[in-house]
Structure formats: structure tokens, C-alpha cells
Image (cartoon, rainbow over all chains, first blue to last red; front, top):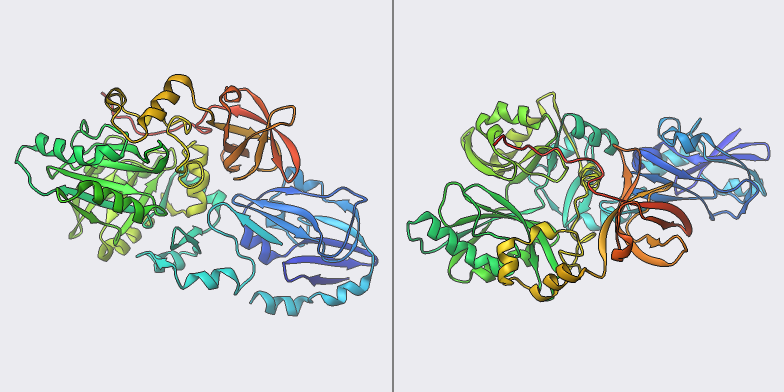
Length: 121
Length: 401
């Protein structure tokens, strides 16, 4: 499994052809208390860079973009009752969506952990 | 990921927007205290101010349960003092009141010493140029204490000093710090600093010696809670800040919590819920139209405002409960058939109620509590219902009669 990050602070954790997408710990800390998460429908297809979700803090609505192209295979239903999971465990239970990745090659254009750490430094 | 905000901003990209604008931002006197306390500084009203410290929801709830300390030094405190006093306190007050009444709709003449009034600066069309506080000095005859909003500060100050002409001296007092101590435990904290201030009635102020300086303390605020707003000279601001946050009942709170608290309290925010096209009647601020001024019809825009009062306005500010995602400023409001009828002017998530709330303008026929409407959020219609404001009951201090 590898984790890649976008410049806009989404992460995608690759497991075979499936990618789990969420926002980084840095992003959740910057946004503050998450109070609402809007997720796409399972089966919807997105190109890299398309808006796939919206994460709302008390003050702001932030759009989440597809880090890679693919089709939504699952969404995190737990977030409808507990959107704060994005704050408490962004890389774990606070994941947003899973998608089947169209082209694993797109991952190569994203940052690895070390590059992302530099990016937010 | 990109953020949109109402007030203050979430900047997720280091080195972009915020760095570009920070050079022109003014720092408040207590800037270093905010940074040291972990405040996340954002541009607001021309100043760099903390949007949050530990988190908006935590600060919001702490203020509702204990006491939050807000730095509101970006606002515009000022004084207006009559040049030629007669020595008769009431005559001098009548004279200074007569200078400012032509630009506001409140009864300033009948203020008692130390009393504060919420009033509105109006244009000739009856639109609101700002909402502000005007108070009669408890110590000095012919003197008013006036506090205006940050974004309109320069225009307001010019208008007030223009109205005074050569008859009164206008002095801005925004070079110190203005702190708001808000919450049910604010009074007990205040009593440890100035015991007499704890006896102030709601919407009254006084000034007391403290630690070699003089504090102006008003029992007022913008959270719906009991609390105080304290004007302190810059050289003493740090000491006062330390003293207040040193009390275990007090935690610093940022602009984010200030906004969510005032929204729950149903209090309008100038530049969002109020602007120069909105009249006091449309804004549901009819209480700010003093009876004497209505009867005299001697305030700017009186013909429009009094006609709206008699015949009803063409739009009205309402509170809404919104199901689902928060409907934020600019979101359209539709009737249940989908016809667009209005717009959200402030909206967000209520930490106290755990759901989305909003202030919106709609035609009066849709303004009755219980009216079902739709809020359009990102192209989707979400159920909304008109509800009386405040969303969370005010808990202002009422002095026993």
C-alpha cells in the first residue's frame, strides 16, 4: 500500500486497484471542527481534479477534488452521523470515499509522504 | 481542496494569499499575546486577528458555559465632547445629543448617565450605513462614548465628526485594546478585577482606576450572553489580558466563535446581514427606532422607514433552521415550489444546537415562523423552516428593579 498526496491536501491510499481518499492531518487541523461532509454517489465516475466531495467546518465549505480518475466504489457513511471523524482520525476512520482507480500511473504525479511533508513545511 | 469562508479565511496553501495581504494588515496591540496563545491569525477588517485558538466549537461552548475573552480592538471606540459646556449636565447632554441625532434613529437625548444605546447610522434613503453603540458618559457632561464597526470605521468617524462640526471635539480611541469578556461566568471574573463593574446594569458602562490606568467597562456584547466590553490603554492591555486569561474560568476565543455565537444569538453582522440598501424595518431592527424619533420623523430616510413600518417592508430578515449542509451567505432561498424568493445573508453551523442555522431575507409573506422553505446549497434543495430568533435564548443580565 502506498499513500500519495495532492498539493491541495487530499490523500489517496492505494490498495491494488482501489484508492481510499481523504484529507490529510494537516488539512483537518487547518480547517478546524468538521461539521458536515457531503459525499458522492457510489458508481459515479470522476476525472482527476473533479470535485468529489465537500467538507464543511464551522466557518467554511471546502471542496475536495479527485486525486486520480476513477469510479466511486464506497463512501464513508459513518461521516453523516460523526463528521468529526475527519478531525480525530483523518487517515483512518475519517476517510471519505473509496474509488476504483482508472490509471495507477496517475499516482506517480502525486507527492509521497516525504514530498508532502516538505510541501506543508 | 479549496476553502470558502464568510469571515476570516482558511488558507491551506502556505505562501499564497495570506502572505500577500499581510503586509498591509494592521496588528492589534495584543498581537504577540494571540500568537503566543496559539491563535491562528487571519485578515479581518484591515487587521490581523485570531480566528481561533484551540478550535471554534470548543471556544464557542466554553463561552456559553464559562467565559470567553475576545480581542475586538479592530472596532472603533471614540468620544465626542461638547466644546462649550454650560455647566448644566442635562443641558450639555441635550446639546451633544442634538449634534448626533440627525444621523441616527435612536433617542440619544434621553440616555441617562452611563447608559448605552444600540442605534443605526442611516443614509437619506433609510439604508443602514452602520450599526453602532452610543453611550452617555457617566462622568463627563456633554460627552458621548461611541463604538462603531471596523470595516466602516473611517467613514463613520468622518460622518460623526462632520455632524459635530465645530461644536464638539471628536477623538478616536482605537489605539488601545478593546476586549470582550463574555459568558455566564464573566461577571464573577470581572468582580475579581473591578468589583463595582459587576454591579453594572445591562447596556450601561462606567470607568474605574485599575493598576495605574483607567478601564472603561461596558456591560454589553455580541454573543447573547452576559458579559463586558473593556477599553484599556495600549500600555496596560497586555497586563489586563494576562490577568483575565490567568483566571481558570476564562479562555481566549477567536473571531470564528464570535461569529457563531452572534449568529445563534440572532444578531446581524454589518456588511453581511445589513448594508446601505437594508432599512431598519427590513432588518427587523424596529426596536432601534425610538418612539420620540418616529413621532418627530426627524431621522434620515424617515419617509421610507415609517412607510415600511406602517405598510410592511418588501423583504424581511428571518431566522431559518436548515436541514443538512449549512446554507451560507449567498445561498438562495426558494418557496416549496422551487421559486427563488430570497437569499441567505449569514449562515453556518450552530455548535450549541448541532444543526445548520441561517439569517435570510425573504418577502414578508414567507416570514412567519413555521413557514416551510428550501435552501439551495450547491444546486440541491434542502428543507428549511422559518424560526424566531434568537436561535439560542439571550441571557443578558437584568438588574433587579
